[in-house]
Length: 511
Ligand code: AHR
Picture: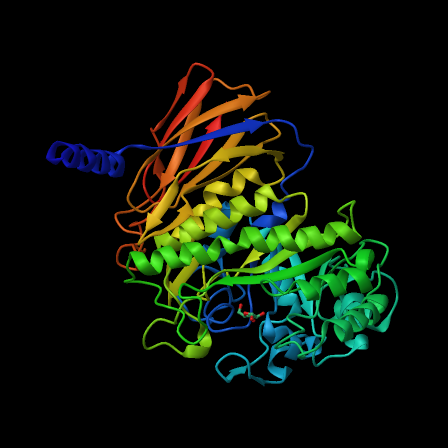
């Protein structure tokens, strides 16, 4: 009996220390492309996203063009941001675009009722946003006001930006310094119309969408991609109604889904200093994105089997409690390795659903929610999330390579989650890119990779990890969590063997 118990105990401890193993097969049997617009961003008039973020005081000692901060522009250009959504968010449905054009001293001031009740001086308006997009070499995505605006207001904004012929609005644009049309393609028709954008029912909004969309015209140089307000999280009725009543009259239907570490809006959990319980729950919550995208896509498939309407996840990311002693309306939060693992996981999900998900926008670019960049006056730092976008940019507009995955679980306190997630693509030069996430905070995982119709001979890679999932970059230690060269992948016959460190994101390039 004693001998049996000893053997059993040895077995238990052997199992808990046994090297975990996963296997994947990468194949070449899809015609889908991973749209670069999945790697999109979002800049709202909120906290220090625009003011004190992109758009700074003229006396701030940093390089600027007008008042646009160029160190930020250069950092975002490095990761090739494909589009930028503006001016909101909830702010968009209280924004009247005519307040933000013409001489700045004459622009009216307003209260930003959604975000901290601060004064909005309208110094950053339409022309400033489009100048920023030009500097970033990115496509503008403008969200029009449906909640408190009018059909005429949106229609005229489109005309002001996109019409080249003779009209009073074209003349006004010229007078304001831009002779040529801007040709803005992406237009949001309202934001969260079920909430801050007007508290509408799906039926009412569907009719409003049709009315607004009718008068948002295609001018000769550009065909609009109109994005309708879609559901939040698992609101499948909203999607069903929109597909039934609007169908292919929209280019895209949005989905908003935030990851709250605790799952509760009244106490979302801290951005730093959390333990494994909070980490595990955050990961459990973020993995629901797979379910949301799958189920919304299935409803869309019923009405649109040819997949003409895109699912546009134009607000996603981790939303924590604000940092202590900051304005609660400014949504300023630190950014940890955990957030990078969340970003890597969500981007893998979007890549794997690229037949339907054609665009996504993490919330938000600078100093707000899951930011890529944090600033403190003239100082700026790149967050762990920034580095994920850097490592994943190779997937932009690359051919999607489907993957079959067998993963072990990440276990905590009697609960389990799939430890590994992955996506893959092949770029125009023929290089294969595989991005793998190991969510298990303790165990490394050996991944054996097989290929179907994919040729390669050499592998290189990068890894992002840290001592703890709660590690962050700070203004005094800005390089605490940064990608490093990865030496844990090698060829073994026809297979690729990868040793994925615990709590890491690995990006591999196969030549
Ligand atoms: O991103 C912050 C806010 O979250 C946006 O303004 C709104 O659309 C969402 O509720």
